[in-house]
Image 1 (cartoon, one colour):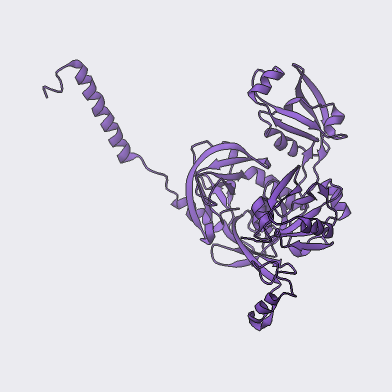
Image 2: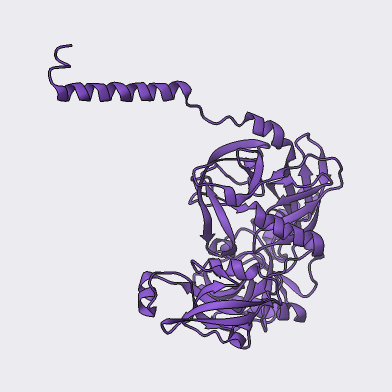
Length: 480
């Protein structure tokens, strides 16, 4: 003991070390990780597995899926025909997908993601007790990725909905779903952030978590420790296609508002004012005389739109809308979208070094094409392009008005190929190819056929509110 107490200084160090050891020892004996077993026992029965079937039509010159560009007058066509059962060349093939969902009412209403059921010909809901039901789509909203389904059943277990605004960063949360088809899988983690904005997702303040989410979890519930649903697991950030520690959930209050509208009317009504905006950076704030970055910078005002009629101009910075602060540019679409069309609201802007207020009459945002089974989609001239992997059809006149275009072709379906690899999606509208407008599928095919293998083509594509060029290199129809 002499050596430990040789000096007062060493004595203080010794006492500090002893206290730290005792402190950590006590934590090890009394500290406990959260126990999720009771939560799972109470809530798992309300979580469902959703499987869908889509029937794809093969292109006219495609023998079997994955073998494009074999016309019927080719000797290879006869070879494949004779080596196919009964000598029949398949003209259709099916694809299946899996997702998750959860029951929100005992009479069979179910919430899931819109992308889980988009273009499905059949939707099957499998309950925790192994019963299966055919589901119908009551309505779906692509902008928030919410779909409301209905099965014919009674006395079903249902979830309890919580308040996402009360979530705290660092709080434990639990997901239940069917990753890769493994039903009723449970994963847990913490809330990493709140109010996240993602590119091309303007209407959802996402909850970011580190809960393990993988393909098949989409549409499943995110629970707090009280066993209340606080979100719908929707997206992951990944460079591999699998979980990398970044998962995003749609707050349940957003989903509930959307589902109530879908149940009541089958559609979602959103406000719009007709502006394009961008983020206010530190440099822009300084140039505009703002004390700090904030608000939404108006870069374009739609001619004849509500904003122009109200007096808004390009270079205005919108600071408040309907009394709600616009902290970042991503706040504005959510606030405006949640405003009832026909409402007259105040807008506070920063212009030429001072604050101005004006009143704007909120207009209604054009509706998306309704998500239904593919068999019930609009008629018109259909065609496929196996060279790049797209199924296209011409727009009806009312659709042109709805999508605010004068011409274009709707991407109804796609399969593995050049277009998918380039980032095309079903629902995109192709306005032009290589700087030439397209009005018919025949015209599109002719322009495409003029492009040589190994050359890049540029498609002008409208997706939602944005229009941009998507480039892809032709490689003779190779879909690998």
